[in-house]
Image (tube, rainbow, N blue to C red; front, side, top):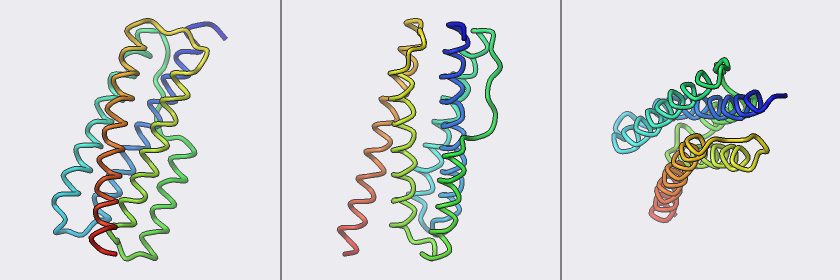
Amino acid sequence: MTTNEKLVSVLNDLIQINNDRIAGYDKAIVSVGADDVELKTIFRKLADQSEGYRIALTDQVLKLGGEAAEGTTGLGKIYRAWMDVKDAFSGDDRQSVLDSCEGGEDAALKAYKEAMGSDAEMTADVRQLLNAQQSALKTAHDTIKKLRDLHETVHS
């Protein structure tokens, strides 16, 4: 595999995890109660964040002469299916949705950590892009975790 092919593969994995994240938050938006405007707004912002990441990653893949991935990862399909199952049992419970979203954020952070640790040679621009996205994902994770913990504390 050439240097560019390795990097394109790494970037395509991140495109797919961002597609997973978009689909997960779209599912979360419909899973919370209609009156839960706060969560719906946060989830829309995070889905839009991943849409921006997907576009930036796609641009990098195209610059490298690669073809951008479409669709989601197997893990993402499992994550969304698990969310569907939890919905069936929990009655769209806010705590369950936040737990699921935190799991999705964990998966996204893991994907970025693996990408940054891969043996694919990265330009400074690509490394900076991935670092910035990873940092923002960590902030998003911490926000979801804080909301989950707060909800758990208030309702226990």
